[in-house]
Image 1: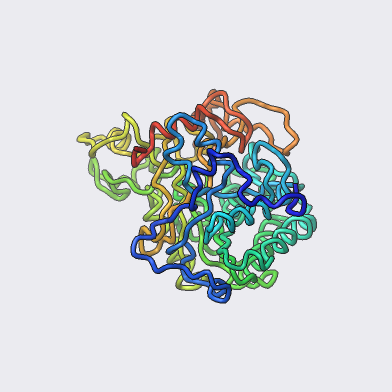
Image 2: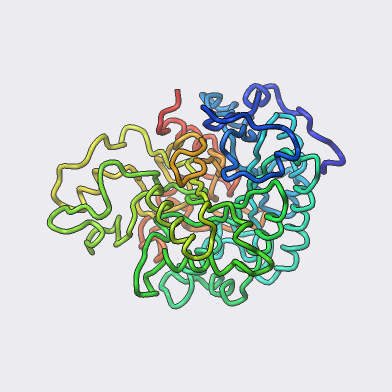
Length: 469
């Protein structure tokens, strides 16, 4: 359904209306009131989340409010995912619902929101190391990506009707880091990632999207930067260096397709993932059993990683990104939608064991089997609620992944969304080199990616940390 067919001025259910009334103020305590003057709105601010009321997607809000206990969080802002070309106009899919981009923007205006979060997610050869969220565009369809996808989004976001809205674009999750970690000659390489590195269409597509969207006066681009359990390794040996190599790859985009550092507001980590904000009971370089934990070859959870949480990782990555050409005022976002890991098994203090493996396993908040596990993780919980400026280098905690929406099907399910079956979503799968050949840790009986799971939502609610009142 297009905007021309129906402008959704308040056309949502009574439940969703109750959930979204007045949008949601994200950590606005003490913040200056945001003016509605169009000229002021077009002057970009350093942190778009500061003082902003962030758009609540009424489709997700209605799903959440329909769940037992869900009304407690149904007014939280979540990302609007544009995961197909048809989603721009609205395709009535279970993933994105009947709203197109203009419908969401109209609804944001009607809510009185100051900011809306849009996920740009349709690269050619999308998610080259996974199958659950593969996209509609083939590896070589960069022309369609630019003309039928990005250009159409830019045209809608440029509408003067939305001049007062700050539009945050989260740019192509799970893309660029794959060109570092999942390409030959590494053991973790996939044929599709080798293809995308060779044809350059990830770099071409991301730089084009950032340049075109960033040229608008009221947009704010945050490029996806993986998470600490993916690119947290820094090493002088290129075969093992993910951290510095990823920052250098991001920096290499500057100058391509007219992209400048000014087009980038910041970067986002942990998008649609489960890595914890911080581990309060152990340090990654802590000495246990006579050896630092991150220098112990027998400690698979750490595995020589320089970080064990997203706070430390994003602070260090921001410094590295600035060193690679990005502006000194860039900010970081962290997706906290599913990284709370509360519940009965959450530790309340450090382990007393002197065995490094036992110490870490009994002390860690993150309860995954392995940090490479990304699909519908059993036992997960909601994390910190969305809020602005929780740390000096963090623009906001955000819920870009709407809680309750699947990462991928537990078994093969035919669909017309281009989404394949990934064994990492099968709870019986015993792993591959990308997750250290460990069990997947996935939930059973899950639908294809983006589709609603009441069971998962209830578990996230039950295991929320901080707990949901």
